[in-house]
Length: 423
Ligand code: 7TS
Image (cartoon, protein in one colour):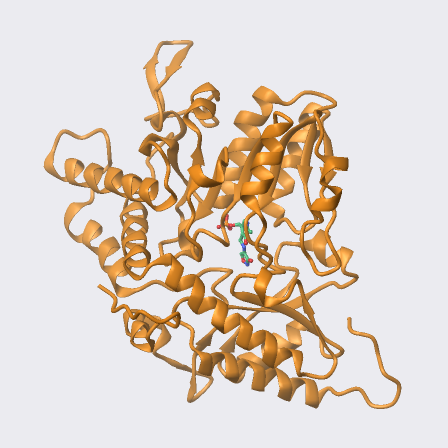
């Protein structure tokens, strides 16, 4: 189990749990991994849990009456109970295993959406959403004739709640919103949005891809109807995610995939669905991945999400302060008090992809591009940005290495003559 300290900053010894971090790249450059918002790394405890399933316990779940199937089934269902506790859900059958956040959101848009949305109904989104929380709703609108509306953003990249009454009305049937923006870092006020959505009779779906790994979540306290997140961003395996839904909503929804495991009974031309959660888990599920996700939840819970959040907050404050000093930089999104542990920015020059390549030569891994938030980048008048994202294993020294590298790149490309506007 990881060692824990009482201060807000986590101990550097925690890095020892992550074998992948202990390597040099491009010669003798120590790897500085600042791309956890895309996918995090995983500790030995998680790698061991996955290996243990394959080495010792693996069989298909919920079907074989033999010892390995029983062990696999126990591990799979134990992981579900861990997810339930992790997000504070009332019942474990409200936690459906999916392939990831994208799969979870698509499932709601397909199943709940097709059953509940009709022409003229409104779907409330906002420009900071990841494509995964936009496109499934656009597709639903295309299928049904529903209307897409957006909550406008403030200049500093927060939801402009002063304009919420204009777009959240009796016509609104669903509010789909990210908890934390993967580009701006903004932390959105989910409890307030849930209250306002419910007041007009709408349901709220929260994209927790960037919050579940970093902040303590309590779905009952937030009173959200649906919540979606991915294992691979929270120290767990790829190929598994979670869809949480309130029992009353999930029970009324039709299955979104048909096949084995999701049935109560099948005849030659008809079927009855199984109860929750099987109804939504057709086919062989991600068995070893579930055990890995359970181990990741144990790992994060042992450290404490509050400590993880405080650690990342200290890192992002340091990065924000350091990067702000660089001439010609434009940091996207709000001040550190309103953001989680990531920072995206543009320089006068060069392009984000070149920045990422130049810092990669120094061993620093960052992401460049539109980060699947093209409408947001369009609204900011840019095509791409560079993003550094932090997790529990990052250190202040790594933040300093980033700032120093970006400073060097900015100096290398300092515009001569007439001053240019940022990209
Ligand atoms: N929602 C948000 C807010 C995300 O950041 C991502 C992935 C997704 C949904 C989709 O998650 P998936 O696990 O289904 O792929 N975000 C990123 C990113 O920022 N860079 O790479 C993936």
